[in-house]
Image (cartoon, one colour):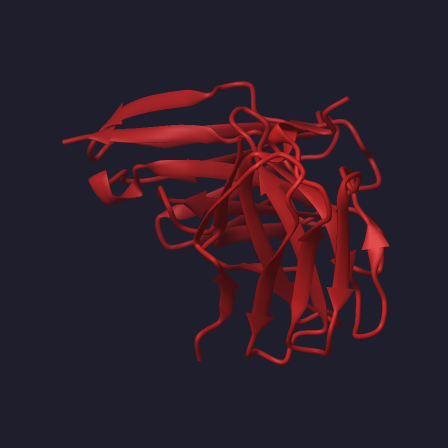
Amino acid sequence: NAGVTQTPKFQVLKTGQSMTLQCAQDMNHNSMYWYRQDPGMGLRLIYYSASEGTTDKGEVPNGYNVSRLNKREFSLRLESAAPSQTSVYFCASCPGLASNEQFFGPGTRLTVL
Amino acid sequence: DQQVKQNSPSLSVQEGRISILNCDYTNSMFDYFLWYKKYPAEGPTFLISISSIKDKNEDGRFTVFLNKSAKHLSLHIVPSQPGDSAVYFCAAKGSGSARQLTFGSGTQLTVLP
């Protein structure tokens, strides 16, 4: 099992460009999440998907959109990137039901110039 | 307003001694708490957790203590090893069905040989 995979690992964008961060999990988990990590601020929840077909806003959703393409895949889109979106982005998944543990991907380091 | 706080950005301990990492929370609706460990350029990995109905959970060298009246939890690592050097995040789960987690800002632990 690969667990949670994210692509790309690194990306540099210019202000105003768009891009999609991809995330996939092969653990048959119900719930998936997108976080951003900034220095001194821990991980902040951007969007989540409790189950296939549903998505909801987290703590910092502005400037982002998501798509739960199927049970395995959950993508994060930046329509018009801004320097404030420079961050490390982590995708996570959780089995749901009786489990509270989230499993994280390796992260995408995004720089917006 | 941060609902989960880790007030010590860094901690250094000698190999073989005890490491104590602290976390405070403000939301009394949190019902489950987790500790994650993060190495540079990797995603966080789950370490240990505790339900709000317990006050202690132990797993090998790692023990988590929960003091609900003080809204405080701590992670004890005994004995500390150089491989334990990492950033440790405290996280708390609310009552939402999607098991969203709220993270603290992290504590960088350095174990000196």
